[in-house]
Image 1 (cartoon, rainbow, N blue to C red):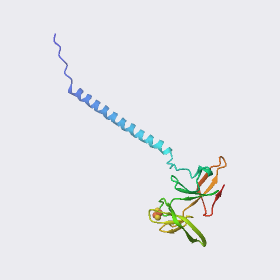
Image 2: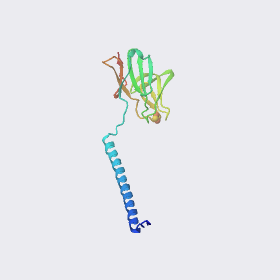
Image 3: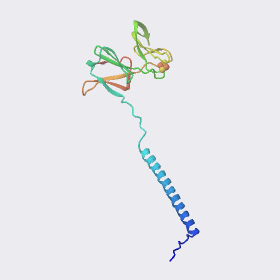
Amino acid sequence: MKFFRKKESPIKSEDAQSDSRRSFLQKLGLGGVLVSLAGFSFQSVRSLIPNVLYEAPQKFKIGFPSSLSDGMTFLEERRIYVFKEGRSFYAISGECTHLGCTVKYTKLNQPKHVEVNGQKKEIPFEFHCPCHGSKFYSDGTNYAGPAPQPLHWFKMEVSPDDGQLIVHMEEEVDQNFRLTV
Ligand code: FES
């Protein structure tokens, strides 16, 4: 007895090919939809997270009054010059008021005597800006170069919790400010 292999109809074979093509395209479409949904979900979740710029706090402790040596201490990370004169403290910003470079503390060989706003002052040191040559007296007053205003002075206080010194960068004070401990 002979078996003959039944010949596949060409029509059926074309149907099968078209089915598989259809299924491939359906999968491709489904994949696209899933990718779009994933992107949309990510964007939705991301939109719930605020774009916050984390800045260093503007009020911070710098140690106990006795831990600072007499004269100038430069707080490099904050760009602040803190001065201790016996029991008095004050803080001057090291940020140039022109375009924000860090000014350099410059000791003078001999103190200068100047008049600032009608007041006679002895100037033992100055702040010089390396970027465009602005110069400031020891009290922060700008007197040369493009800096449009004096260096800022910040309020200081003693922490009621532990007695450490606090600098308030968020609160400017005038050049006569002294914290006495
Ligand atoms: S940034 Fe200081 S003089 Fe320009």
